[in-house]
Length: 220
Ligand code: B16
Ligand code: MG
Image (cartoon, rainbow, N blue to C red; front, side):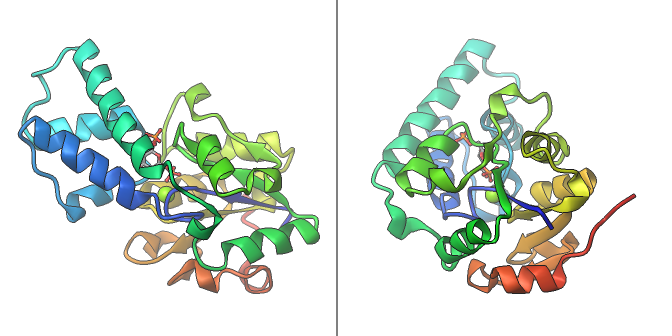
């Protein structure tokens, strides 16, 4: 194992609750009610795809022009930015700080494969930007998770082969993306983690020692 590629929301920090709150309020403003169960479908999915899923769920897919959809997505993002504006290193999920330090010390490369366009801002707020050797820009990708493109791009930026990498995810779409990329997949919390090669109940269980014990190459 030469590199570890992280998802952001739900792995490094719990921004999923803020995404949910912002989407719930936006959806309500156009007469659509979403709940926690529906929100599971939005994890790891891009902003625009999330909006499309919400409109579909509320039976309003054809009610808005492209411009209006852009405005709705921008409104959600503005609310979300407000909710994450006060984030600090204290918002790192349990064990993540130590895990990043151990990876760095062991010379293992670290990448970010987040669908979030707010990723760099959040890494800065958490004061962990300097740990990352590669940060994929999701705006440059053709396909979102579950397509493997984002994880393949992270491996390419790190100059690693997929089989040399482990990917860590909390979302179903993300774990499918890691598996399809030919990397060793680590899944956090159930039920999303069911398809992962190694499952942990919480980030507190993520240590370099344990990951090295479980890691297996998935050469084709
Ligand atoms: P933004 P991840 C994803 O991040 C979130 O899980 C998903 O809920 C969100 O819609 C997406 O980022 C886009 O985020 O609106 O900030 O660009 O889990 O891939 O780190
Ligand atoms: Mg996630």
